[in-house]
Image 1 (cartoon, rainbow, N blue to C red):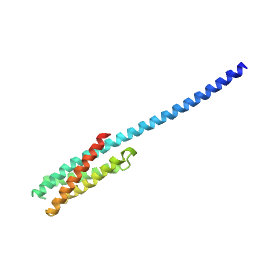
Image 2 (cartoon, one colour):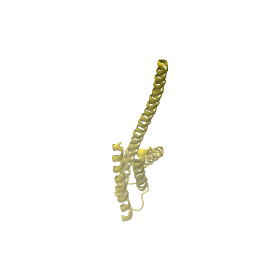
Image 3 (cartoon, rainbow, N blue to C red):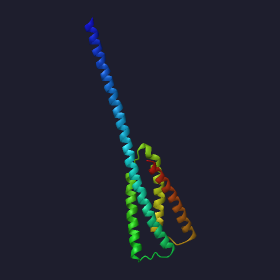
Image 4 (cartoon, rainbow, N blue to C red):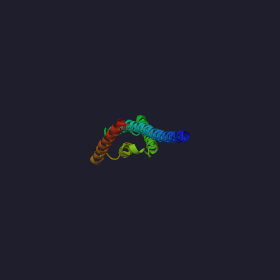
Length: 165
């Protein structure tokens, strides 16, 4: 009888060890999954930050082009103006590529991505306005001011979201 009790306790210990091992594997995989998701969000936030920085830099260049246009300094033959236009076009294309790379945000970053996308839409409109100015009129100047205010508002929200990560 004593042998049977001993065999029973060994069997119970094996099952208990098996269950504990299974729980440890489940907990470990859950922790790893959580860690991996956090790392993905951090990497995504860094990429968003880079896109934000590029847009901010390009907007300063676009604002200078618009300012030069309003002041009448945008001579098409000016090598500085032509260089600035080409550089802004190149930077805008790079920014578009960065946005394409960000098109599939992690679940915790969807709201921040939506804000960045809104900022990028206003950014593209403002850059187009700077690259292809029309006849200087009150409507054009109102549009420029509206786009600039909208863009700055969106960029401010994006900066706050990226900083939260």
